[in-house]
Length: 95
Image 1: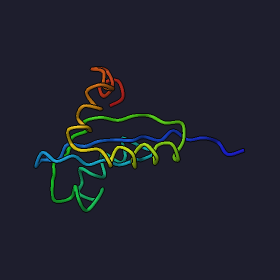
Image 2: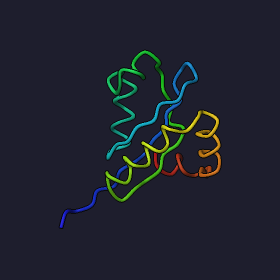
Image 3: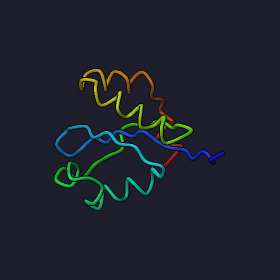
């Protein structure tokens, strides 16, 4: 049986106000990569980016499914989802 690894769905706010959604197994490392302009072509031209939201999953497959579903939402739906799910300690306790 495979050892399950934590995975994260994350949402960034880009300098132009747009949102970027992704998944990773190492959130701190992925954020640092984005900030260096190496995380994704989309965010490279929209620096700096800021972590707006993240969710933790028990495995990569669950995180990828959540990412796919999240990306299908409109911006308004994404922001409503984040507002509903977020707590003030989410980001502060992780970073």
